[in-house]
Image 1 (tube, rainbow, N blue to C red):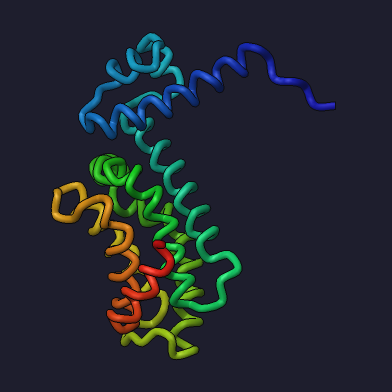
Image 2: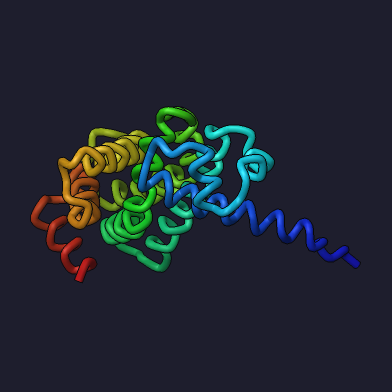
Length: 205
């Protein structure tokens, strides 16, 4: 019979979860928030934060891992049960963007700490799933691109990251960004702009 977790373990897990939740909120509010600020906001001493995360970079890396897991789950949920490749892509982008808006500043932070290569590696399962949908769409003539599906999935990923940065820099309104992202990704896959705009509008109602 498995041993039940001790009170200390449960308390440590709860502290770790609280630190992560507070850190995300603090970093979105102030990208330069220090470990001291995060500790104060979480209601714990600095030593407790460092007991769970040896550095600010390790804390951000953990937040990025959680963000990628959430984005992957949203991407899968958006595709589930959808046969039409264009609708599948649109739904998955819209689903991802609901979370991406929350994590977009974290992505900007991660570029300084985790590096884009690290982010790309974490996103590999999402890219692989997107490649399957794009390959099916290309085979069925729903999409049209000179790029093979794996390269097109890579381009789409980079476009979404660039759009997050555009929102961060005030070039695109956050409330419009999800719709813009879905239409942009579809048109990049060769869907006519009028059809892409119409489809995303239907899904966004």
